[in-house]
Amino acid sequence: MINFNGNLISSKEKFLNHENRGFKYGDALFETVRISNGKLLFWEDHYFRLMSSMRILRMEIPMEFTMEFLEAEFIKTLEVNKLLGSTARGRLSVFRNDGGRYTPKTNECSFVLEVEELEVPFYTIDDTSYEIELYKDFYVNADMLSNLKSTNKLIHIVSSVYAKENGYQNCLLLNGAKQVVEAINGNVFLVSGKKIKTPPLKDGCLDGILRKKLTEIISKWDDFDLEEVSISPFELQKADELFITNTIIGIQPITKYRKKQFETTVARSLLGRLNASARLS
Image 1: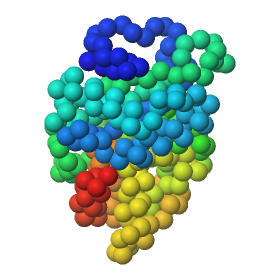
Image 2 (image 1 turned 90 degrees about the horizontal axis):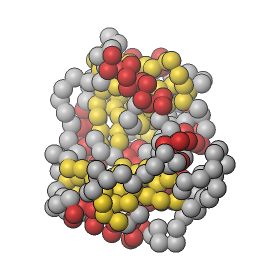
Image 3 (image 1 turned 180 degrees about the horizontal axis):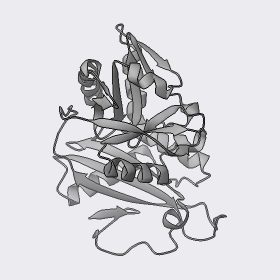
Image 4 (image 1 turned 30 degrees about the vertical axis):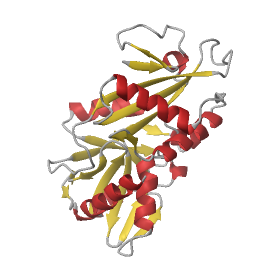
């Protein structure tokens, strides 16, 4: 069962048509939330990112779109799918209502909420090999629209096809200045000595929720200095560690880039701090 504008309907039911603006123009945003026993992890951060993104795209925010209302809709959807006591992935998609071409007829919005079960109840690190490569066929724009979690993900799709065709687990995306921006499915962090670097938002990376939480955690960690600075591809093979972050996986260490093998010590140390932060969120 899915939740369409507060109504629970079968996932097999046809409820969107060819006029849907998310389908026709990518005029949509989404939030992917990790849920544990009915608790939406980092929900306040997700909610305020969604509200900010809707304002940037000039979407009309419905009066009922409070943090409490949307959380209750998640809970309702979990209950009907018998996932309230489980670990789950929730996705909230918001799109401008039908009508118009590039210029919409209305700025009013609808939402779709869906949930699916996850196997692991907390963030863990997989010990399997994780090899990445640079993707250089297309580039991420270094602007505010790239910071949004919108449905315009063509670069991420074609780069994931490239990774699959060439036997990589992921790719790092670049902007027009040939700086490392992010991975296909998350933000990227680089460890070099006592410094941990992550690309700044102005370079075009997603304004990720886990990126935000880890920058807060690292900033309070006496062992390392955090720098939000541009990362050149030439720095990658000199790094001690590389890792990717997103709301669902938490922290994914990169073990190999070209001929360089990476450690995972810092990523594992951060994992415990992240799980502690998630419990308090």
